[in-house]
Length: 142
Ligand code: HEM
Image 1 (spheres, helix red, strand yellow):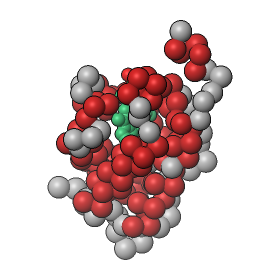
Image 2 (cartoon, rainbow, N blue to C red):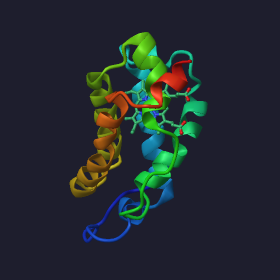
Image 3 (cartoon, rainbow, N blue to C red):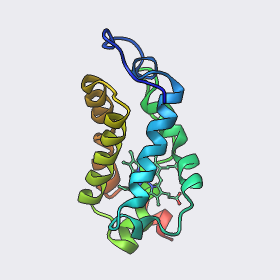
Image 4 (cartoon, rainbow, N blue to C red):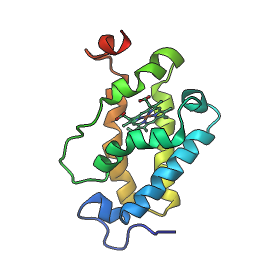
C-alpha cells in the first residue's frame, strides 16, 4: 500500500504532503468503508450506492487536498445533506462521527498528525455550513 508523508512533510500542497493521489484515493476508500460499516450512519446511506456517493464527493476531495487559499466552488454542502437532515434527522453529532472516520482513515494510512490536523481544519467549517439554515433551503424543498 502507498505510504504517506515523510520527515519534512510540513510545507507545500496537501496532496503532495500526504503522498499523492494514490494515497488520497486510499483514504477516501477507507473513509467510505467506515461510513457504510457504521450501524447508525447506514440509515442515511442505505439508498445511496457507495460508488455514486464517492463520485459526488470527488470535487470536494480534490478541493480538500488542493492548493491552500482556493475556495470550494462545488455544490452547496447544505443542499447536499438537506434531505437526510429534514427527513431522517441527520445531526451535527452524526457529522462529527463521519469526520472522525475521515481522520481514522488517514491515520490508518500513517499520515502525519500535522497533516491530519490540517485536513480536519479544512473540513470542520462545513459542519456549520451543513447545519445552518440558508436561503436556498426553501427552493430545494419545493
Ligand atoms: C453528499 C451523506 C459526511 C461532504 C452526500 C449525500 C449524502 C451524504 C446522502 C448525497 C446527496 C445527494 O443525493 O446528492 C453523508 C453522511 C455522512 C456524510 C451520512 C456521515 C457523517 C460528509 C462529510 C463531508 C461530506 C464528513 C465533508 C465535508 C459531502 C459532499 C457531498 C456529499 C461534498 C456532495 C455534494 C455534491 O453533490 O457536489 N453526503 N455525508 N459529507 N457530502 Fe456527505
